[in-house]
Amino acid sequence: MLIAQNIGFAIIAAVMIVGAIRVVTTSNVVHGALWLVVVLAGAAAQYVLLAAEFVAVTQVLVYIGAVMVLFLFGTMLTRSRIGRDSGLNNTYWKLGIPVALALFAAMAIALVDSFGSEKMPADGAIVNTQQISDQIFGPYLLPFWALSFVLLAAVIGAIVLARKD
Amino acid sequence: MFVNQFLILAAILFCIGVYGVIARKNGVMVLMAIELILNAVNLNLIAFSMRNGSADGQTFALFVIAVAAAEVGVGLSLVLLIYRNRRTISLDDLSEMKG
Image 1 (cartoon, rainbow over the protein chains, first blue to last red):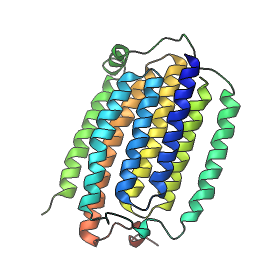
Image 2: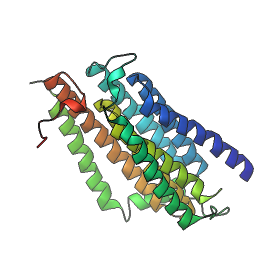
Image 3: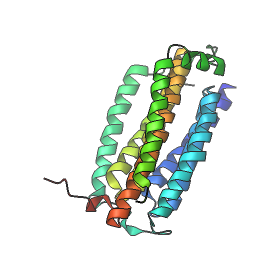
Image 4: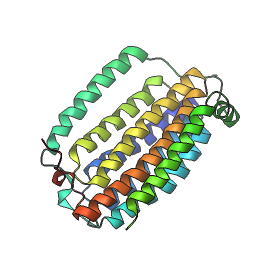
């Protein structure tokens, strides 16, 4: 069981990393959006592996369903070139590589130092959807309301910004 | 399963996202890189939820997903507005606020 989980993790992680690298290096905006779908689906699979099925389903609905349609509409409406486009990178894009590598080195040192070879609890309490709803409608009720207003403001703001007048 | 394997994967995704934000010029591509960063954060939250056996991490991940959806909606409408006024979404050409 544990070996199967680790093999599954390794395969999904490799696919996610390849997809993420393609998102930031591809010269085709639509291909970038489709590689992003691969990364988001891989993240949903990792959530299932971590026994978070409700968040995994929400990820599929919200990200792969809604956000991806938004990205494709954004590509269409801004008339980005469909196909290869050599002008997607900055003049100084090479600066990003050392910054990302240094950031990763710092995070990796900190993570290995703090968590070392600590294992996930094998027989830990599995969090089910009922507990999440008890959390949202219990101690987190006020943030939940605030979030409703954030979404309302975002919807109205998007309409106001994108309206032709 | 180690705790660290999920955290290191999230760190890799985060750094790829940071590289994308620095390297990309197209506004839509920068927003995609920001999505990568937000997903790395969510993966961390879920991993810690499993480690601590508590529902707090998953609740936070749901909040992050909702805020990310709002951010993408407003961000893409901003990119659309910039395109309508300037006929370009190249971030290098938006230099009015340069001192």
